[in-house]
Every structure is written in structure tokens, then in C-alpha cells.
Length: 281
Image (cartoon, rainbow, N blue to C red; front, top):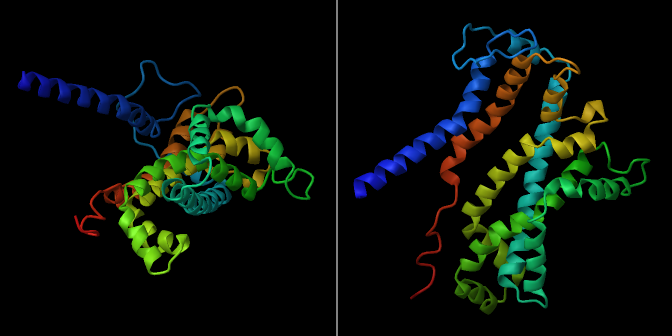
């Protein structure tokens, strides 16, 4: 039975890997092809030719540098603000006993059950009413960053709260005895011990913001010099026909920074035991 269970486990694991890798492999192989606006049937899983014409076409696009710059700025600022606000919010829910804490946290959890696209219209109207410009923050990087940070507070707070709640309470009491307040406790004790969780959140935030299309299209799509990489890639799609090798090659190029990010920081994901030995049993 143990051998059968192990065999089934590896079988499921291998099938799952194939299911997840196959679309990416299909995109990679077909980015070297040259199609006349129609994908081959059956699909090519091995490139019949090696041509970098599609990559050259994408790299020659005049709006690529601006789109890449916008994506970098929006992604980095969103990650910074998200980590700061979410960690403060998680600390408040985990370590500060205030009136209505559990009720408010349940409201946070309830918002996670709603599909994100349902809120795009009220979010658009709120951003349109902020500022003195005619369209408010619509069509600006600041508006999109505000949307990303605000929309992710609930989920990110939920992600960090459990880790901060699990830290020894004696550490917080020791800071209070020495005359420190909540800010001292947060920045000197809780934040360093929560760095693995915060680092994981930062990686997820960087990846999610870099690849996000729907909100970027709605908020920035009408302003050509503000578009992000996903929006630029979508613009390569023709109105009546599409050169799919252009789409595939652009998508591969856009994924390279995230692949490198994961490869470099994969060992920084959540680890345990950082607070072991900090208090006596």
C-alpha cells in the first residue's frame, strides 16, 4: 500500500507539472515560428524552425521602452506601499486589542470572496473624483498604484496576520517594560522577525502587479504614454487577425524579469524558527 500510494503521488505530481508547463512550452516553441495569422492544427510542440524575427519585431516597437519603464515604476512603488501598509495593518489586527477588531477583520475576509472585477466601476469613479484634473487620477500611474495598493490591503493583511499573531507575546511585553510603544515594537521586533513572510508577500505583489492587465487597461488604456507591458502586448493583437508569434515572443520577454526574480529569491520564501530561543520556556 505504501508503494502504491507513493506511485500515485508521483503520477499526480508529474501530470500536474505537465499540465502547468505545457502552455508555456507551446508559447515558447511557437514564438520561433512564422504564422500567416492562423495557428497550426495540430499545434506545434516542437519548433519546425528557429527564427528570431518575432523577437526582433517586438523589440523594435517604439512604445516598448516607455511601457517597460511604466511597468517597473508601478510595480516597485506598489510593492513598497503594499508591504508597508499591509504589515502595519496586520500588526494592528494581530497585536492591538481594539473595539470591533474581529468584526472588522471578518469584513476584510468577506471582501476576499468577491471577484475583483466587480469593483472596477466604483473604483474608476472614486479615482475619477480624486484631484483637480478633469479625469482625476484616471490615466495616471498614481491612480493605478492607489488602486493596486487599496484593493490588496485585505488579502495582504490576512496573509501577514497569522505570522505576526504567532510571534511570542513576551517580546512585546519586554519592549513595553523598557518604555517602548507600538511603533518601537513593530519596527524593532515584529518587522525583523516577520521578514520571511514580508519577503514572500513582496514577491507575490511584484509578480501580480507586473502581470496585471485588466485594471491597467481600464485606468491607463486611453493614455498611450502611460500603458504598461501587458497592455502593450495586447495592442499587438490585430482587430481582425493576429500574428501570434508576436504575442508569444512579447509574452516570453515580459516573463523574463519574473523568472529571474523567482530564481534569485526562491530561498527567501516563508521559513520558520526565527523566534526560537527568543524567550525562555
